[in-house]
Length: 57
Image 1 (tube, helix red, strand yellow):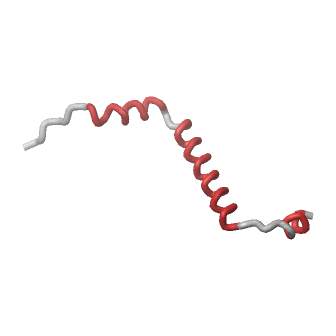
Image 2 (image 1 turned 90 degrees about the horizontal axis):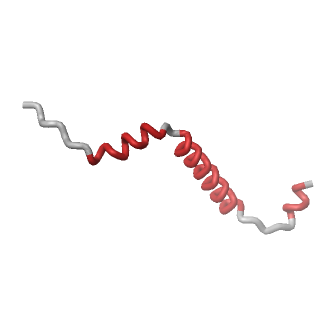
Image 3 (image 1 turned 180 degrees about the vertical axis):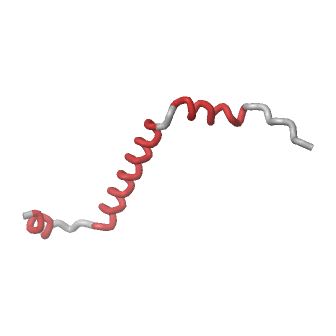
């Protein structure tokens, strides 16, 4: 059935594939961001502001 519906449509399959791939990667990134532990993110955010340790001689 879908074969007959799509037969008349002039679709650019490469563009559709790129759009689906982008959307999937964006969704995975959102899940990874919101699933990460908040304490870990705060520790990583403060890391550049911390004083460096004295070099060992």
